[in-house]
Image (cartoon, rainbow, N blue to C red; front, side, top):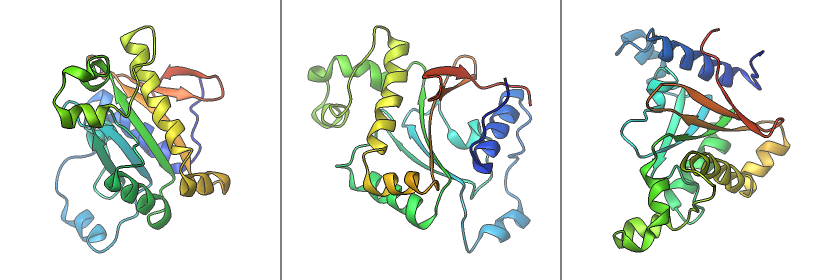
Length: 201
C-alpha cells in the first residue's frame, strides 16, 4: 500500500517511526550544531496529544530531533476545552507555530481508558478529569481506538482548528501505539478504518 502523506511533516513523522521500529533512530543525543540552529526559534511540523503513560514517548516513537514536534500530555490523551493549558497549547500550535498536523496518539493497555468503567472508585481529581471521556466499544481495544476518534471529533469542534482545516493548513490524525510490539496503527478516514503503518520504506 502506498503511504498517505498529506504533507511533508507527516512524511517525516512516519519515516521517523520506521527508524524507531528498526532500532536505527537518528535521534542520538545532544548535537551542538543542531542546538545552535534551534536556540532562538522553533518551527515544529506537528503537535502530538499523547497520554501521560510513561511507556509512550512521542519524541522516541517518531524519532524526532528537538524542535520538530511539540507534545501535550495528559491522562486519556484528552482534548478538554475546559482545560486552559490544553486550549492555550492548541491555539499557540495552530495560530503561532502553524503546525501542519495534530496527532492524537493513543496506546494499547491504556489504564486511563480502563478506568472509565470505574470512575466512582477513583480519587476525586482523577475521576473529575477522566469523567470527560467515555468508554465506548465492545472490547478494550475498540474503546482505546474510539477514544482517539472521540478526541479528534472534539478538535474539529474548536473554532480556530475548524478555520485552519477549512484553509487547508492543518491535518488531523489519529494513531494508536502498541506497547508490546512497537507497531503503530493509523486511522484512515477515507476507509473509516485502522491500518498498521508499514515498517518498510
